[in-house]
Length: 121
Image 1 (cartoon, helix red, strand yellow):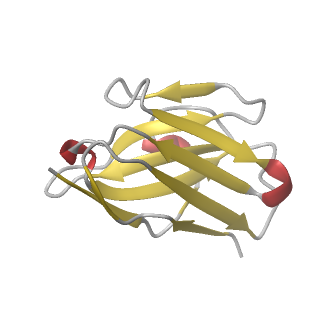
Image 2 (cartoon, helix red, strand yellow):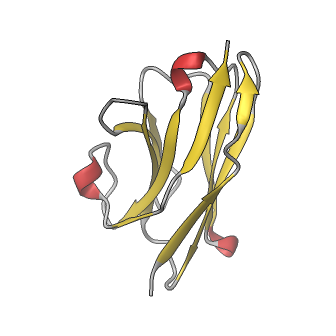
């Protein structure tokens, strides 16, 4: 049974930093892309960042230069380092994995339950 579990979300002040983690289990994901999406309050889910099996990355324009995605294949874990956080980064953050590298949610097969990030002004 494939499972993705996010952690690291919390309340933080604007300008602060957080690191989200997503631990995958149930299979080996080293050959799959892993991504982060988020859903702000009252809005649709949106792409944040993704990393391919070979380490290529892509970011949403809104987070470029502030967020960094990385992965540790030995631990089946993907991370999202978030710096210079803004109130508009407030959202539930989801990790996902799939066999194709892409920025669309439909690209991904498995999803976590999400972790809440709240940035206060």
